[in-house]
Structure formats: C-alpha cells, structure tokens
Image (cartoon, rainbow, N blue to C red; front, side, top):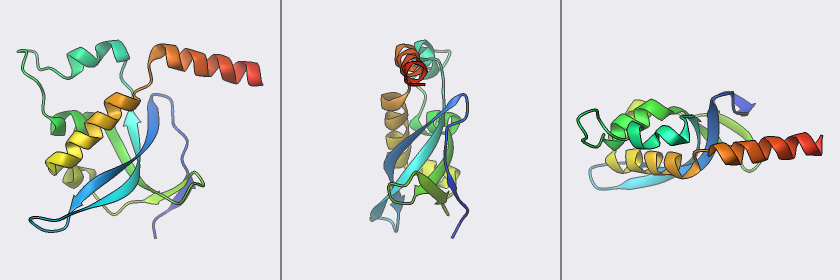
Length: 126
C-alpha cells in the first residue's frame, strides 16, 4: 500500500473527489474513486485558457495535463488518502478520463467570491 496521509490543499491548489475510468481492455472500463489535486487558475482567465492563440479549442488531454497535479486514492471518508498506482499521463490518454478531469476541474474551480466568503467565514468562526 502507498503512503497514507491527510491531504490538505496547498496555496494555489484545490482538492476534489470524483471517479475516473481506467481501461481494462479494448472495450471495458472500470471506474475508480480518486481525490484529484488541481492547480488553481484565476476564474476570469478560464475562457482564454481553454482556447489556443489561433482561436481553436484545446484538447481535454492538453487541459487536464496542465491542471491535474496528482491523483490519490481516498480511504473512506476519513480525509486520508494513499498513493495511486496509476500514472497521470496514462490516465489522461483515455479520452473519457481526460474529459471527466477537465469537466470536474471547471465545475469545482473556486470562484474569487467563493474564496472570499470562505475566508470571511473562517475568520468569523475563529
């Protein structure tokens, strides 16, 4: 088993639970629950980030490789995780996995106003 630790986001990152498909053979996939560690980008730059300078859309694989920093295996609902045996590069090569990673990233990317509200709540709770 890999190293187990409590995962807390570092500055400039955020965590998200989701499931990714791993290809078992040419026709079969199995979905595995993971905790993804994502690099933050400013929300107001998302439109520019998803496009190439020539105006064409970037691929899910390109986008996923830029923002997914690590995949970890959740250990129940304890907040602890263990290292995964899957290489991020190999996972992203599966088209549907890359699409899920990018969709999860875009859906869960913290907005500036959400971060400000969370910080204000933490300050008032202290």
